[in-house]
Image (cartoon, rainbow, N blue to C red; front, side):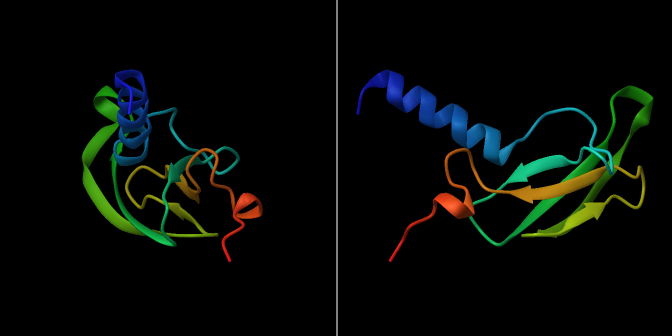
Length: 90
């Protein structure tokens, strides 16, 4: 494996393990990628004074979740290039 491929793999895994992005709303939820049907994630709220202690919860495939503290919305999604319609395992 080339060094550049290893770096790219590391970035992709970091995006899955430590996602960052805009605050999720009902109309545009924060998408959390996972290879599995269920994932445990933590919400820290927004930036600065909008932040809060971490709230842990399970995020199930096909369902959204609203944080009970800050009302941020999350949605389960497949990793880039691994959509359900593209999955052709036999």
